[in-house]
Length: 498
Image (cartoon, rainbow, N blue to C red; front, side, top):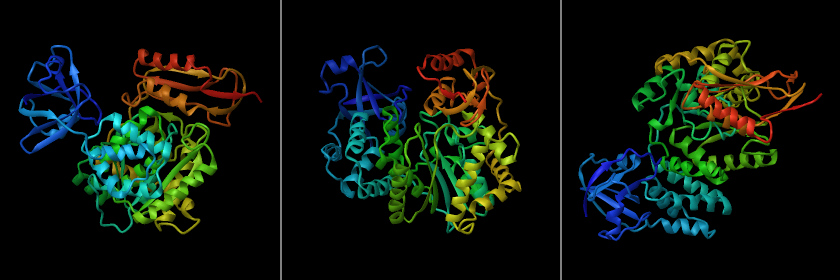
């Protein structure tokens, strides 16, 4: 049946959603119901979408509205005529049902599933079933490899002339922890090629791209990215400007609201992105602690083994650094505050956070040794020399100029300080509480918002001493963060009497 296409300006993340008037659904002209799957076509262009009804007068009869993701995918102009008809579920729905039943999935089945995910053919309900089933039943190394290869094939792949292409990744879960710009600058100063693409935050106060964007342009078209890498040996770009492993981005959007960390899907996500980005040598940061994604050393070592087992068939050399995850790394949590810390470390300032500096050196050292830029056991020393000589900062500034320099914004003017209830030693800083409060204060959308940590784990503090400061653009958003912190049954920072 012919309908007029209308872009409604509704953000449904990556899900393709279509909207019809409730009156049109009630008349049963199309035999459709809400949450049914429809096919929308225009000439050679076609798309599957999940149907929703509209009870207001937003859509007249004979008009089909679509979400932003659906509009972009279909590629038809607003107001054009399209055909709308009922559609059967994609054949790969059977693959999801098999995983729900606990059956192992063969490479061809995973390939079909990933293609349909990348094309937006599955609803969030179906994808949630796949994520939950993969978490409950687990994914074998064979299944993870199948997912990686299918995910890489679902999008673009970057190719580089350099024989060794270095990269770095953290499994996340730790506020601050902005080591990537430090590692990239050191590795590039050592002569390695480091075309680093990073993500924006989804549920954290800042992603690497959000932080770096306060200092330089990160949205680089492919040709410009190549020019930056050719001249500086590295870049710090937003990966969303490229279609690298698009199926993985869709799965992540489903995982995050559920707060599910499926090990097999995490392994697939990280390694697929690295293969698609053209990396050959990767250092992976695995923080361990009570508030981290990995809570004990034994689990971290098992995860490191799986990374190595999976990387070999993909032609990747992976080095895993197991790090401390008992609390945030660095002082700043939020884009501008984290960028301030990065600059302080690279400039060698006395105020630079010691933990961020040491962790950046440890990761950079592992990467230099793995990629052959330093002898075994000498990577950290070589990394420290490049940092202390100013070579790493000089390389970072070169990247900054080539990508388009921006000046670091000042922290938000609305502030609130949290004080120590008594004298003692800082025992623990809640990763979850700090991250949540920073987001409520406005981060990452408000790049000036976040939390400035004034004490670290192990520090001696006096009664009434400020432990951290919340920054926000306005008193209203500051109030959201303060209300959350004060309503928590447990303090965000634990101070034990000495």
